[in-house]
Length: 256
Image (cartoon, rainbow, N blue to C red):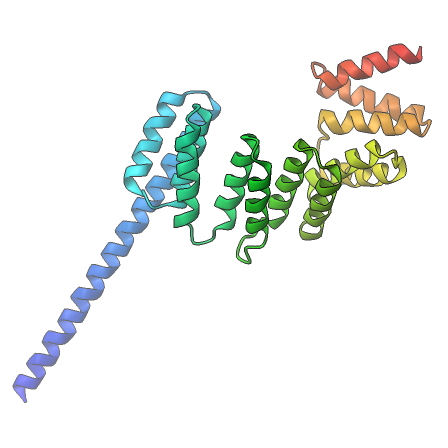
């Protein structure tokens, strides 16, 4: 009886030690992942500041901490592309897809890379794979990127279909609304262009220069001089150095 109790106590102690060890290992892994994530964010901040040396230092550290992280591989890919090493960038983009639990994000990122390289058909394939990943939350973003890429071919009709899909997934997508407004304007459907544009205006806090210039041209087509002046004033106040404001000045000169 004493022997049975002794064995039971020993087994219980072994289980407790095993659980403690596993918990410690899981906590250690979580800490390393957090540290890698912080280093990636610091690297991205340094890249925004154009401090590429410090960015590389942080990325190398993150890569040592979590070489199998999709986030780290994606950041390494972006850095490689930024510094002109497209071959290495492609390797990291693919690696990010391979190690990701949810592949939609890395697939979307790889699609944008391929599009920037002029590989439009391949890019479209990855955008669609990202959009059809049931666990990927930013489906609308993938469709917007597919549309933007289609415009570069150019395939405006295909782009329009993608922007419409983006709105189905995310009705608040300001990018899709603005791109659809531009496409409708180019096709001389000024009423529909204005519908998309006004919806866009309601979604954003500050319209960008492109949207304001489009609004000016739509208002001009409608003979709405007051709106032309209003949007022109906003363009002058918020984007005085933009090419769109220069275009507005040229328009004003032609009307006087």
